Image 1 (tube, rainbow, N blue to C red):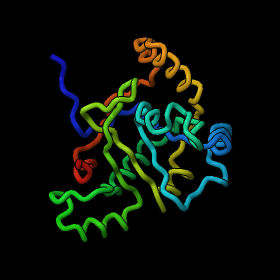
Image 2: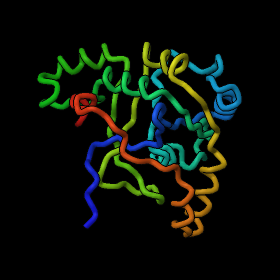
Image 3: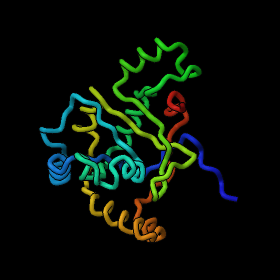
Length: 199
């Protein structure tokens, strides 16, 4: 009998020192970032930037790289230390009484935290929701600056991969599409890293 996937668990493509997250941008920003391994000066540090360890959730969000200003999909390899720092310093984006006590305390935490977490339904190849959740990690202020300046190890334009997988899905070739997906597996985290983030 197959073991049931926990409702809140981080799954990602990762190595001993890095974790891969996904973002989608307009071609001007996305292609420059992939070419230079860093975000260009036109990338805004003043707004929250959301990173996603799930390739298929990114495909759901950007419509397989077809939505306006999301036509370039980036695989951003960042340091594991940076990723864990963001999680430790994050606040849930919605109020949970058992975690936050009163609503005012949660609002204070949310304002002070440089990162925030949402758990949205994970997606299958047809982008249908699955019964377990996918981590979305929002970075602002100090976290966004650290992400851009310290954590990034490499940036790859994976738009062609997204397009190829989508073509197989549209043709009903789900096994072939699945073979091309980035290999995401449970990401090892100490219990205390996610204790304040499990909705």
